[in-house]
Length: 99
Image (cartoon, rainbow, N blue to C red; front, side, top):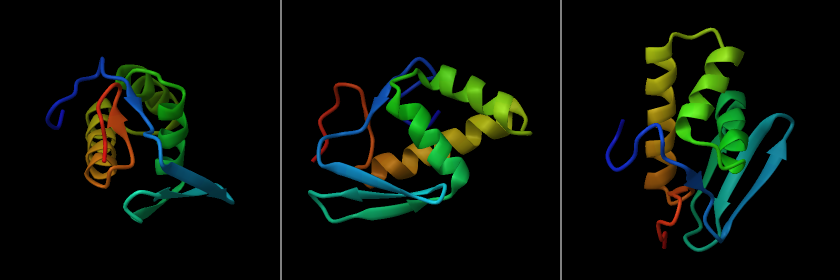
């Protein structure tokens, strides 16, 4: 996976992050930085799974059950999503401090 995490990692939504569901799509806002990000329905589903504090392995397994993708493609998509969200400060590895 992209640096600093594995499939056993748990992610968390840091303080100062708010989101609003708009007809199946999510808008996520970092109140500290002003950065916001719109998520499509698949990104919204991943976000909701991450909110439940599941490991990335559990998230990937659920995504593979729900979507018609190979394990390699599902993992790559999950990795890319996490990298984008971490880069914007919208999610963090559990117990990691985000500014």
